[in-house]
Length: 324
Image (cartoon, rainbow, N blue to C red; front, side, top):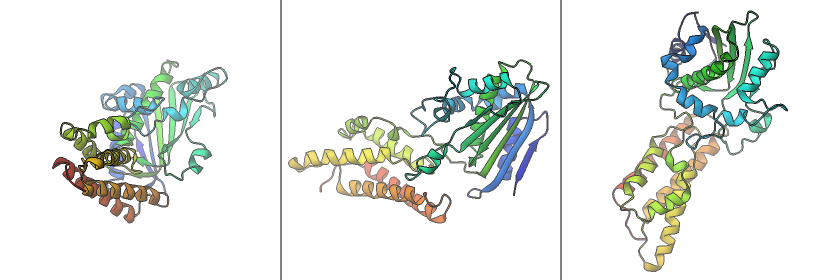
């Protein structure tokens, strides 16, 4: 079953995005084979609405990935170059200059290697394919993208902005282009307004030594430590990044071990036990996602993790001193 949405010529990219939202109005419900398509004036790639998403789109196109993202699309595209040095958008431009209707002006972000090596359920791009072409009259740039999954509330506008960045680069080399024909095909589309778009919070990307230094002085650094865990609790993730909470638990346990000789550990046992429990729940949640991405059991476990983090925040906020 296909769900086809077409934006009439002269329309706006924002209109196409809003139509996708209306097609996927219910949270937790997956729409199969959502196809978004439209013909736009080329100036639309610098429309005020789309420009609002370009900063994040540039992060997704960057290589290496910025610290605040789990990965970037650019890291899967930019490292690969032709013998003459073209890669990324430059490769598309080279192919189109040689043959405007080339069947090889395309990217494949994933290989079977990434798809097969998924034992740890590591995050990989949903954006899988991009193909570009130019019509015979050299006036219309055609961009088609394929996504294995697509969140339409927050991520679709960023993906559209990525397409516009690519179109802008290509247009700069083909001054005859006056229109953009854009098609986005998502095997599974869904609406999750709270989805983090694979952004990371500070606790998951800062140096573990920074965590250790902060927790050695829990009085002066209480607000910062509480904020780290609060940001993690608020973040809506599909695969939960375990790095920061593991580093926090290891640092607290190490500090307590050093203080045992003095009989006064800094962090109370209930806090450490709860943190250990949450870390185990995260590992189980991520393992379960290897067999299912949308089961009710995943939702229950996710809720339990968030409730555990709220309790940890409460313990941290109300003071850390305690006895074994």
